[in-house]
Length: 184
Image 1: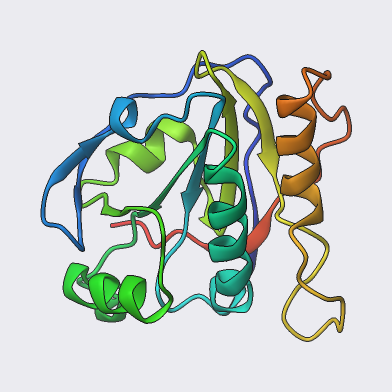
Image 2: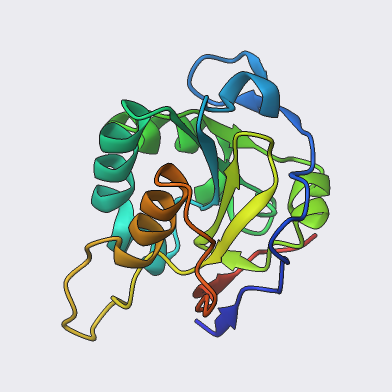
């Protein structure tokens, strides 16, 4: 498993639109439908990545906590399922149910959405304000599998809190690190 850092995504960049199939409901869901009143978190994740598995419980906790404060959450998997069948849509549905995801888990079959966000790894986190302008792109927190640092979502949590309190974005945003997106 090679570590891959996230690519730059400057503060103020508009969120690229998408309209993808939700693997749980089977419905197509757009960015406008998941957009929160106060902000939106877009997460690129997958089923099999140990970095995602390591933080799944915190993703659920964050979404449950901040959806009540007007933050929308959505997860997208863009991996090539021919080479990585464990990330297939039917298994995404099972994973979403097993982890009690309180957010849609969308399948980016063409990988066009991942490319439009310049997503590089799983997990990869983006926070947008109420106008869908980028406020944060970086790590969830300092925890990684095997480093003994507790998963607490501190980096993303701070970014969301700053957004909710109308403060400036975090100036020193640490890149996310995880498994590279499995490109076709």
